[in-house]
Amino acid sequence: MARGIRKYQDCNTGGWFMVVDKGSNPLNFIDPSGTAMFTYSIRRGIDLGLLDAKNYADVALRGYKALFPFIDVNSKGLLDVIGACDGVVIKKDFKSYVTVDKVLNAKEAVAGILWASVIMEKDKIALE
Image 1 (spheres, rainbow, N blue to C red):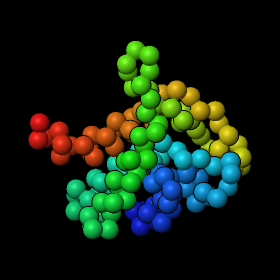
Image 2 (spheres, rainbow, N blue to C red):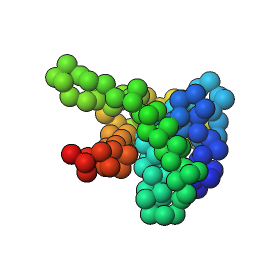
Image 3 (tube, rainbow, N blue to C red):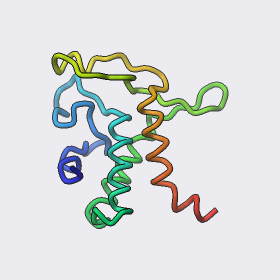
């Protein structure tokens, strides 16, 4: 899985598209949920010794950095996740899938970003 995911990582942002292998379609977009989950999975694979850090550490780091534009500080000083869809299920076609409305703090994106942040920042946290 990691080899395939690495192949489709967006060169410009470091994230992954909603439909991973259709990045050239103008309706497609960088998905914070998937990007967070792939980032976590790749870093976890490195930590477990299943993936070679030499080949995958930069993939995870680029994925993690791709999440930063999806984090916004709201008027109360709290963090919001923007640009994600909530509860996307199987759709009849590509257009129906990628045109689902984006919502503030979509649960999959919030959870994924929390998991990705913890695994990517754990070494820094341990030093404090």
